[in-house]
Image (cartoon, rainbow, N blue to C red):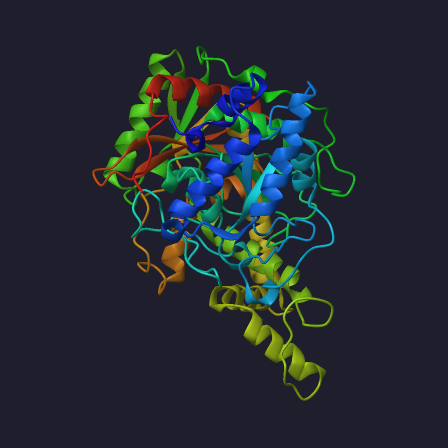
Length: 486
């Protein structure tokens, strides 16, 4: 096995036993990036010197026999909407192509406090608006399993670099499925935590009531390790949940006996690809064979999820992106007649087509003539969806669905049809609307060799149940270790 193929927990054990050095591990990943990055396009910025400096610091601590956290010395990547002090944070937009934040996001600071090694910042759809990473101003990212297909989005770069072994793990952000959908397409593990469990301070906002940072990893154990490092209350984020720290690795138990699992029938309609349905149901059968109780039920508001998501996210996105006006930071038009002309030209030049589309839609929705008709009505349906989930979790420990109705689609296949692109999030968006935790993991492959994802959903702050079930399923399926050929 090559060093760049190691999981975080495997690399941790080798580092602690001094079987390898952190510099060797880091250099192996930098060499891997040099080898395959031109094919994958997963990174916007590669922090070569910073990574080696951080690696040398970890090696020095190891040589002194200092106790180290689990993620010390593990090479990782951050989505390019997570602020990193003095390191480019572009959101894959011309608007911020030269922006270097003066501070670290809380999640970045916590990983640096664990002596994590930053390899770079990953590509994404501009301002996290998209489902394919084709909306990046910088470049499109390719799926490592098939370079003619998308890796998903908006955290497509974060998923692709983990799948391609260009990082041991990464962080992404999830507004309507932007961690889980690319995790499904790229055959890795992606967790969207409960809203508020992980601080959003330093995350460049898209839709503030939906956004959540989470880990993308090679296996479920790594997912628990990263969640340990980034979860917890933050005084800089008033929406963070005030709960005590937890060790999520203690829930990695190969046992789901007695679990009550609900299968919502609306997620298996005529829109799902047969191979996706069959693969997910095979995984459900494995849970049943391990002792879980399986029952089909109905989530009747599922059909409203995408309209509600589009209305709320566009409205909040329009409000959040109003700050990019060329006055304080970011892109500014070079030629203009007056201040209003500067605003118009700056925003016209700085934003790409998808960002403009959502800003215009959100502004329309929030206008005095349409606010009650669209935005307030969407909020009411959101409340009904939350109540429906709460009722379901009064009966079930876990809800299991496909992550996406299809496997990864071809690059360029949906760029002319924004509504079809939204459909990639039809099974993931409800989780963000309700603020629930959900995890996507690989459960098989289609006839083209493309990964298929299964989604595990639990009640708020019940990540432990998701991780336990995912760990048991991972052990039972034995899929971990299959790699794309680059």
